[in-house]
Length: 129
Image (cartoon, rainbow, N blue to C red; front, side, top):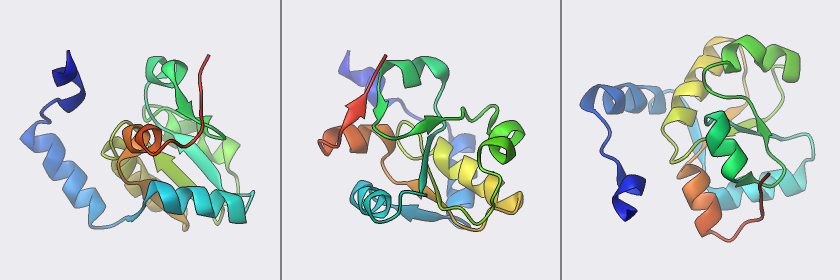
């Protein structure tokens, strides 16, 4: 059953992610927690699918799935200078989403390296339904 957590990503997907990672900035889980502690204006946004979000998420995060983030981000985060940290399952989808938000004019966007798995493994606080 463990194999499900280590799915092999396709070459095309990894190429897209690596391309995005060349343009975006990443932060670690520890840096994310420090930034949230230092500034309560920081927005931690989970870009995973609804079912993943319901199973468990980083405490203090909000949810804007990767499929709708471009459509809804300006309603949720109108100020494009707001510090926004995105995370997904392992740090790949959030890199793609961060790249798109930068194209939309967000100037202070980060992707959390390692994603939900790294957050959970670090012992940081979590919430679920």
